[in-house]
Length: 266
Picture 1 (cartoon, rainbow, N blue to C red):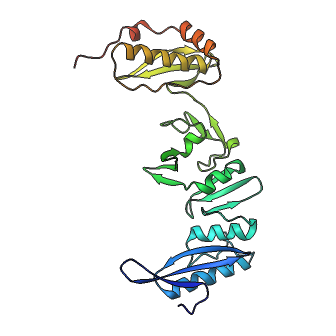
Picture 2: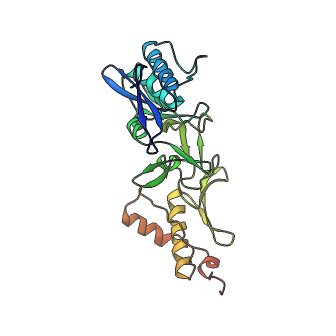
Picture 3: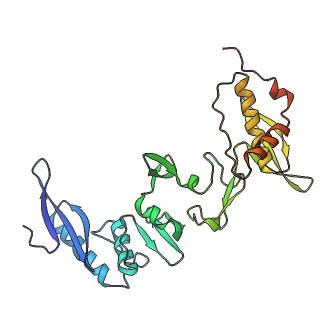
């Protein structure tokens, strides 16, 4: 039994002792984590009590957590100020919230996404941020309509220049569809459809991105029919009816060079 308030000894499978710390605030019991020593667990409890009872304490000042993890410090501060406890390092404001992936990297989201990120931890692999959702890795960008392998500045941009600000008002999708690029032609916005095989083949230039996206799909269908085994990504287009899609699909013209293209002999 520990003599330190809020500290409880426990044993690992190998019989060695470690210490758990917890705190109760406004009838909410909160685990502060596991610690190697009774002293460090007690320090975490004292730091948590000080934070919860001192509104002026925050990580924006010179004060930094010493015994508590940074994530736990954020969650406690949010609970103190907003009376909601989230397991993830979230601090909520009236119209948006911050998700502290680290001290240096802070995501900003609309409040509509609050309870999603409260229950989905943001992770990083290979330079990409994602959450685990129903056993799948879902990239943050894909949740906001940004295609896989889209290029920042070409296919999308963050209006205020902050790549961690995922508020809907801050995301501008330039090219929504695979193989479609916005271009300027004679002073007018047009859309070029391009498909990559061994190099880029221009399918055509179209007045709307919907036509360009459907042209890309048609070119992919033709190449597959001609024997190409590459898994071409098909554009999902939800702003036209099936009849409208079929009419555009029939009317778009695919260059003869692509129509006749066949894979090289194996």
